[in-house]
Length: 123
Figure 1 (cartoon, rainbow, N blue to C red):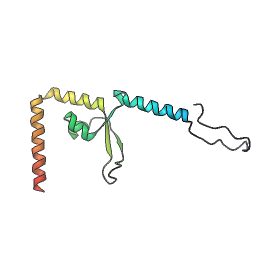
Figure 2 (cartoon, one colour; figure 1 turned 90 degrees about the vertical axis):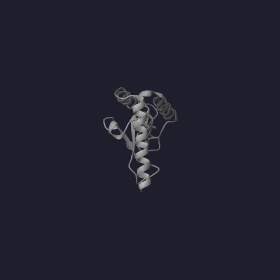
Figure 3 (tube, rainbow, N blue to C red; figure 1 turned 60 degrees about the vertical axis):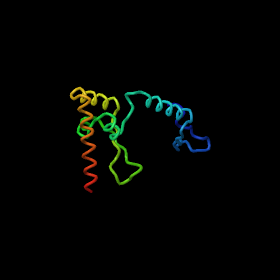
């Protein structure tokens, strides 16, 4: 990795280690690689709420998938945010949808919605 460390200045003693400094060229390359990786479907991430809402999965379906977590920046006292690989979520959703029909999915979604509304009204 060229350019990550600067050479010792002539005024410094020879035993002093060189100071590290980011090279703007390599830093830009890292950003470009990061943007490229985000565009690849195998590296795209989905948060748990999106996986539940868009892919008709529940928390038990997500248990078997690999997870990455990060602290919740907006609400510090809440649980960390869970990220899942989008391809794995899509595959799990396909497996689940092969087992039940679309009308059954919509029926389950309506039942869950009604239960949530009833629970909210009781409080």
